Length: 181
Image 1 (spheres, helix red, strand yellow):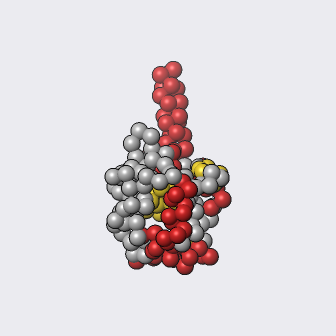
Image 2 (cartoon, one colour; image 1 turned 120 degrees about the vertical axis):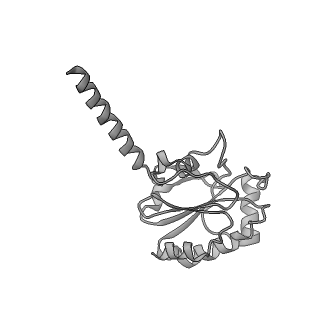
Image 3 (tube, helix red, strand yellow; image 1 turned 60 degrees about the horizontal axis):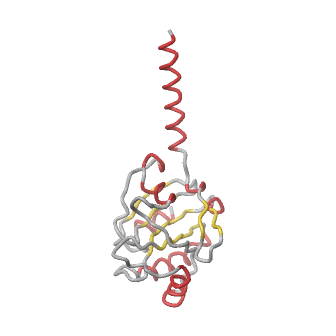
């Protein structure tokens, strides 16, 4: 009888743990922006969010232009882009936070929120990217950040909904339709 009760308790604990893992959202995270100010993802509740890892010296860097265009077009409709500079791929983001901010504003007029430079892979992967890339945390899928400008689409409930390859333009119909949907 004790063994049966112990197994039941263990089953209950595992069920609760699995349920808690699948209920994680982006809203649990607080990060630092390029100016060192705290940015709370909970402030974005009810909005669709695109999280993208960026780099200033990448062949895909011109995507900043389309990111800014789509942000301006849909921000009044509850859409936001959050950029995370990262130097994980071929050292294509070597700058300081201030240099990154200046680059983004001067070259692409970026107005969407940009966070402090982080690591998006490896042993020092930021907690936001652990959430985005691990099914046990995001409840959707495991993924690897393949390169700069990979896009993670978060629904209005703060849950990961889609992972978009780096080469896919921010204005691709798949993304636009998701924003509008």
